[in-house]
Image (cartoon, rainbow, N blue to C red; front, side, top):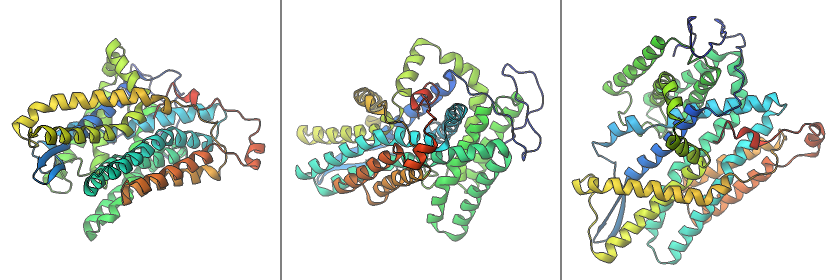
Length: 461
């Protein structure tokens, strides 16, 4: 991706750039107001994730009872849909933009890297503790109510699947201060190294046939995408000539098409998600270029009353919506099965004409119910935690423990027992994120950051 623009006149002042990537680049001053285009894109990404997962829910009833399946599996309509609704690359780019902006503001006030990361631990794990605890209790209640064990297990696995984002995003945010400094010193080298590592992992995976190697790209792909967000925050992408951005967009799309045609990557972009492949990095480049090209229009659109209301609603509840949309969908699936069993009315087969006729109502119900739950529980996400710790010893442990809790649920599955263990791990991580050791407190005793509340006008993820 070309990132060094030729001089030109632009509505946005171009930053003075260095032609040598080993020299520190000037840093754009952190804005003091929200970026309407960024907020709108992030809110739209969250809504797209909910819609995509809602379309993947397949519920039928046969002679043996309810059958819960992935409605998209083997469906010809799904792969093209992922070209529009696979928004996770863009979400991580936007997360890099927001994180860089928030950290620079904190750093300008004298805050530390440890305080920034501790704040991210709190922001992500507080709502996670609630949802994991409630789901664990619900699974225990279902088991005690006599629901077949296999259905309870399916519900636990389905709930855990989207939690990969929580663990990976926490990792990316924890490494953000270090990688942002590296970006400010050697931007091309840093992103080039991450992208090259992602390619090497894909090559090694293909050459050996060992799928587990791809797990390494849970770091390299998403960190590289976050790094693109730093360029966006610097204003370097918007400073490129429009023609250059169009060429980047076209080149990325052409590269994706060639990889699909050559059988290098699956044309189903969700299939490239677990584990992530370099295809998602190419998608992120295309989405970033498209966003930059449309940014002025998106900014204008974000000012309309209805769009601003939607954006504000989602922005204030981002993690709550993401974490709770799957329990909502599982509850809807269970209610559908109970309705069919009690009335004898057959549920439409996934991908059938009758199924598609009912999808608008299903999608509307999923979005509305998720919004209702988010309204009820948004106070948890906005809860004021103790001031983030400055302990350089405890914060990394908090991050590791939080990620470990997510890994437990993903690998072992969500049950009443694993949920209880994960909640305990997260609570300890939260305790560490707000605890100061005596030496740290003495060292930073006179340094009082304005706290996470001051970051909220810029960042809510």
